[in-house]
Image (cartoon, rainbow, N blue to C red; front, side, top):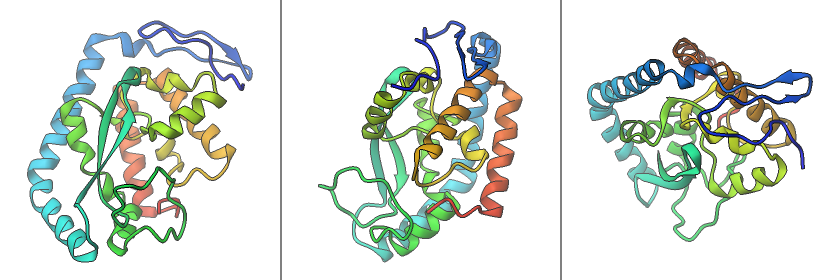
Length: 229
């Protein structure tokens, strides 16, 4: 089993030498003021977006989804949150409706993806309902992306430190996504890259890092690196 970090203790610093580096749990995450600032930003941004944009954009997307294919507008999937607490992550449905279908990662030119679904995934608009998760408190706007439970089980077998991603709330976007790791996880490099950046985020977290990640995420969506599908 590959090891990138040692055993975590929530709320404490993590010291570990591996690959010539030392990973530490950011002291900012122990600062109640900074943690409160992050939560206030989450509530403020998600509320403003849902009220001023979501109220007219969500109905438009919902109508397009219903016209394009049969099935519900929203899709929910069980995911692991902070400290591995399970929660339902909301998205706009982008695939043909199959209530009995088992988890299978979306691939390029996946026949399950609908026409409007392809557009929503390419622009990341399918993730907007997760602002509800943020408002509830299950997620943060910025943090490691929550993976499907089935994927977490597989990754925890491969990486003994993978559970460290769950020391913080999962996010709608994260450092890995800001650096171009979006869409399908095709090979080992993709998961290793995401994991390394997720752990770096936990090590270096600050309120201003979140702002930078938001800026880079928007920039990446506008420029489109072709990874989202």
